[in-house]
Image 1 (cartoon, rainbow, N blue to C red):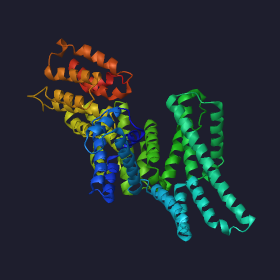
Image 2 (image 1 turned 45 degrees about the vertical axis):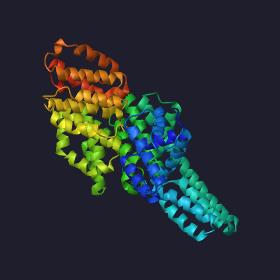
Image 3 (image 1 turned 60 degrees about the vertical axis):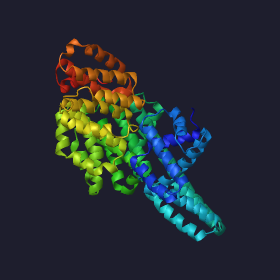
Image 4 (image 1 turned 180 degrees about the vertical axis):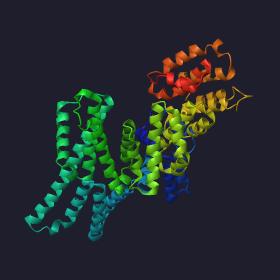
Length: 522
């Protein structure tokens, strides 16, 4: 049955919530009558959709699924009305129990309160909230909000503006805010355009190059430092992306002796971005997603340029908790990824154990977004797996295998198979060698996750479990060729290569380490 827009919106919203946000919604629900029959129905609806998503149900089947459940109505329109109301209540809970972005949530609440108080003619209370709001907008460097607050201020003071001079002063404030907003948008658009060019490796236009060369001239003249915080971050990001682009496309002979290279300039501008975040910690707290992305790019670039000392010094200037979070969420993850990409498995393991990453993740897991936490755990599992250390690899793959599959199904599902492989290698299935695969096959079939490719993967793994010796006499070689062909070019099947290299290692009686070195990921 086709989704109604209300059901579609609710499905998409619940699918993207972190477990902390889901927990916050359940807490919030207690304050709007969770003990009452009607209120309980909305909580049950939330749980039903969450269960449906976890089981990887198809979107078009959700309406039928909810109609089969008792208490959500007898026709699609009844379900749609319930979903519309629940959607609004979830958004409301995110405003009152926010997962981060405390100041933005406070600012949005102030805007609503100002409008309410103004319409009640409570002007002095309104003025007090405007003053608080302006303090927050200056921390966030958000001229669009600031302009809105000044408009409210103008409404309050309209009857007090008694001269053209006062009116012109108010217009100057507006012009300044609009100019700041234009500078922010211009710099951020340049940064995004250069980032897209680097991803596509597309040629740069003459107009864009001229614009960025002018931006560099502004930097040399000291004009960028005169911009507002958000505009400066955008400008330095744009220049970092620009010189990263030039470094990829320029010839070594074009570089003038003794001149700062494009690679070094790219890193310097990225350092300026990190400096601005570290000098404005309240802004960094509110813009966590962007700050995390900038940190990842910076750390990765330091590793490529063999300058680890620079990102190790990131902890200076941050309090202990935030320094540790940066270490485990960004530095550790990017460092382990870097070693894996360069097939430096032992270096990755030594780094992981020397820095005691396991304990750090345990301590800070609730402050790391679920997607990143999953990626870190999977990376650690890969390290031990590549070293044929199935004992430790299974410990990390099992953590991923039982995380919410809707977060990263392309990683969670292969980890379910990798968990079975590791346990089999550890002789856990010595007397019941084929049991885990049929069980996994049944579970995946019930969840609608057993497509033809996954079935072929499970069949090949089960073949090895049944015939640990004498695989040359089976058709495993032909199966492997088909699996590789079916996987190549399919992004959602990327991480199945870890299973394929194990199958190869078993077939050729060699190590996973050696097979990974021969493998060419798609």
